[in-house]
Image (cartoon, rainbow, N blue to C red; front, side, top):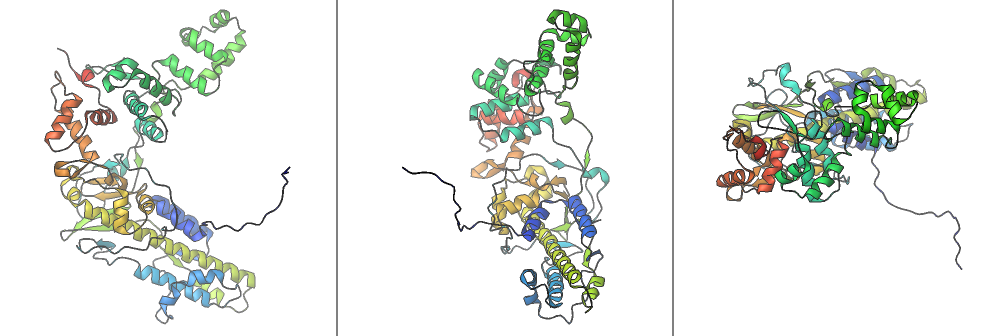
Length: 529
């Protein structure tokens, strides 16, 4: 008979471990300009060998061979702490080289010419050995369109305003993370599309008034089964914020009490059976009806006071948030150019004071090792900042090559573009592109756009060519805006109109696009004389 017993076993395995420098590189790539500025300011406080200034290092005219020095940071990490100051010399030379030669050839101050028709050379991807999870597609409209500006005119403050996520955005994001049946998912889109600003399941009639909408009406308008709509409602009602997708105030509060684990409490009885008395502050009558002491009713009231009667309101604030473009895409001499926005970003250099300190023979050993470590960290940071800038510029160059018609003529010329396609063109992993465009904005002649705005999937277009999904949604919206309100277009008719333009889309897809745009159904849009 076999017995189990604890024992120690030595086992050799191989696993991927990110070095501190690579971890920093990954985190830097995801930062936008404002976040990068804050991070650099923190490093200036923490690392004494970093200084703010225009010069990176002292003159390197008499430096040794720079090709060998490029690999110096890695060599220095394994070198003996008692080594000579050659470590520092190599580090500073490496920093100088990286700052001098990793930048693309400029055609204007801070500008990079991207008009050359030659195929771009694949760049070394610092993240190629990392197995990143695949990223969600970027289909959200992140655009803010200002007036036209001159080529090098600094955009006004108003151009930097962007709207925060709406209630629909927040719910759709949660839906995208849910693992549910596809038919139920489509029904969830219909429910989310029929929520008002307060988060209640209400529709708008032909006179613009909000009216209750039943699950049967949602099933009919979206051509779902009633069972799928009922399941979808249960899914959405468990999303954040609590109390969403209720038909009235009573249901909204009961949903929140259930989520709080108060389903068997006196508060549920008060809300379910005596909400009108509660609104009129008839606490004694409630206590008498429930045969409960008044203090118990007051305790229940304290719970109800902390519930939100309008759970969707916090996602419908009109206060804009401040953004700053990370890049400017401008036209110089008939060619589009990428200009990185480095206004107010601290320019770093290595401190000559601490270099002279290392030259002292009488310097304490521990102090010397500490200063050397600070130099290694500083050089790594300088290299990573330059690498971040280089990757962002390369990605923007690829966007320009693919979206030049959009930059010239406007949003109707936006072409479908996937992250993996840009990654292949630039020669990096798709996750690198995802990080490079995350939470970053570009100022163009057409307005200020999130970089992820340029990425959208394709819909079958004329002669098999792809049409951007964003363009299809804009066409759907334009058709409905120009329809006869007494005889509004059906989803099937809109699909037929798109087909006449060479865009093949199913009626069910039109229904989904319309609900994404928060446009009511044909029946709800009809104006009766």
